[in-house]
Length: 214
Image 1 (cartoon, rainbow, N blue to C red):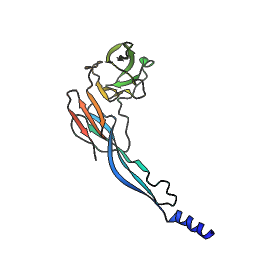
Image 2: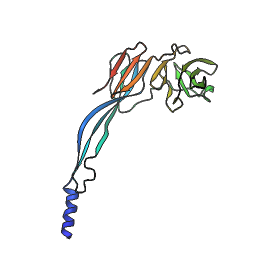
Image 3: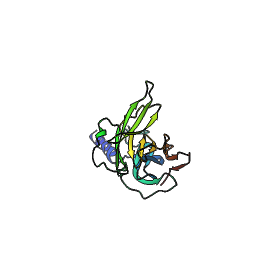
Image 4: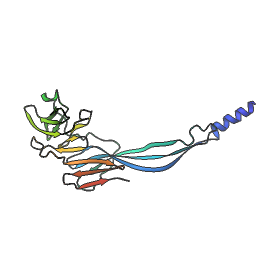
């Protein structure tokens, strides 16, 4: 009896294995930030999924599925034409110039940032009882301009509204800031992540799409 237990334990430890059958390997692209007005930074992950073949006697994992990220890199890409720069292992801070100081308008602000070395604040203002709101642009002296939206759910979530290069990023839309104004109520670019790809759509509807192997 003792010898059978030893043999069983030896087989369990040395004679068995867990195999991972990879059924699909794919790259997934997502938005990570902006380098400047025309170059975005994207995160590209390589992922694998499949099933586990557990050859142990107990085989408690046999048949289970797995899904894991194998690698993760960052690339600069153009939003106006197809171009991919050199990869990096981490993303730097591409959200605009650093703030020289905290502005006086920051107290009630949803976001603060610097565009062309000038500091701005964004305040969320409700316009009616039906969910409409405005994102109001101001500096330390006065209110400058605003973007109006019919629905503002989630705008107060962390990172939803932020300054990036010369834009105000509202979720996955980029609104240009120029001469203390929003030149248009329409975004200069919309960022769409779907089917593991990323697409940059400009105001005219033209777009650049990235996906697959970089």
